[in-house]
Image 1: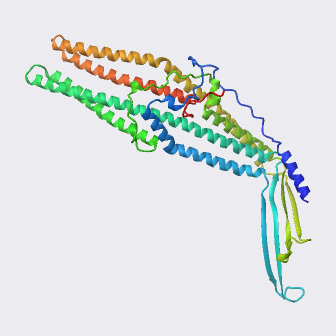
Image 2: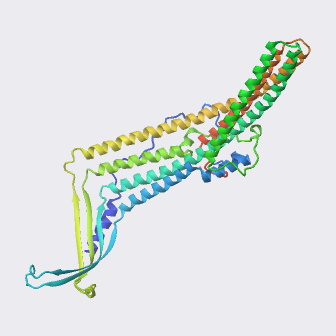
Image 3: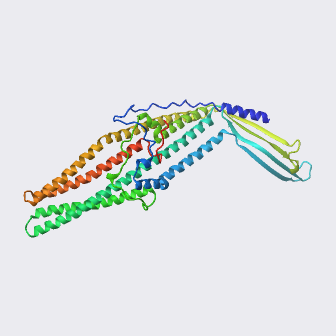
Length: 468
């Protein structure tokens, strides 16, 4: 009996290699073969985030976020959940053996005993049992196991994608807070200088040296600067709160801040080819793993149309005396194969197969959309990179021109050639130019971060050699 059972298990192991799942083929990437702008050479996904973000304060914030961010913790726990589900499913590939020990004593009443006397009987059993092990002739269990494995790998890739996104979001939140801080400082100085100018305008008005119109124009500038200062105070506090949430702990014991103009991010990131995104971006790899899981589920749905053969068996020893166990003649065994053949199920198996095929088509569309989205993110970042340096240079020239204009307008006003309106207008335009330059610098830095993230950068803490 043991030889027969062993032979059946070996046969089941051989035949379980058969699968009714469709042969997986990666869908063609629905994107162009090259970017519209020069992508440069070499990978960006291997660049470590410590090299990409040289700011010591930002490095400390990213490290703290990777340790304390709750979303990242949830992503890590999702991996453990998927691993457990895969282990549960993979356990069905092997038989479950159980050891059992039982003993019973029973008294039979004399009234129901054929001998007319009451008796006490005993029975003891020790053995091993094999409970309903499915012989996977048509690959149903194997397909379910492959699907569970693909889902587990997809969850791992999703966690890597969450890590990349977290690093990028922390960096962008930090730079946004720095931009608001610089704009706040600029607004504060502007407000103080306009207050001083307003007091002088009041004195000139009181002695009749200027008109009420000049006074009201000066007051308008003061109140405008005051409103800007209040707005930036709120925005800076909200940006700090957003950064605190991402980091997961209070923003204390950190290195000093670095100004936006001194942030030396790697802006000339090489993008490579669009086809490289398929292997470098975790979200694309996760979408492909979900597609493979859907493909494997089709195999399980197809196998449901065929017979399911399960095996239940047991071997052991039994005796009516405890001391008689394991003696000659006490061996017992049982062998109970079962075959279930679907005959009528009201279309349930057909509906399940149709559902699996539809879900695969959905997974294909999701995979293709993920690729297209990734391609657009990289293309947008490359397009912005090509013009942002020129925009900053132009905005810096505008600021310098406005500063010179203010000097000339003030000089003309002091000499009585121009009115105070020219000075006030020059002050207003200079303040706008200074604010716009800060925004342009922030835009260039966030664009570099977006390109780094969209190319799959951020998984490594330090730069590693490309294995491709």
